[in-house]
Length: 108
Image (cartoon, rainbow, N blue to C red; front, side, top):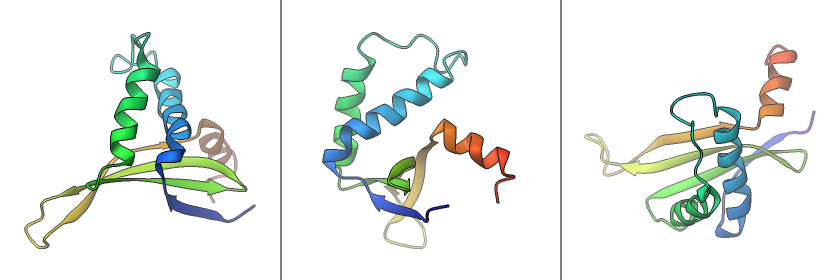
């Protein structure tokens, strides 16, 4: 199995980030939180994720394996009582096929 690499997403990864996030919404459309996907969801997602990709206070990391993106992690700067700045996970997505493969192989 190819090695997993992680890199910070760049603004030119916008289409990829939008696709990953919309895939999550489609996959869980039966869940009340994700039900009723708006007709303008792609346009709104592009605006939102563009602002996140260009923010000085957020970073989206992409996990890649064998040249394919397998997931993302979005982190944001938060206040911390012990450090000037800390980073917190704000959301993540793992591509459905990767999750299924991990389950089938016992997540080794």
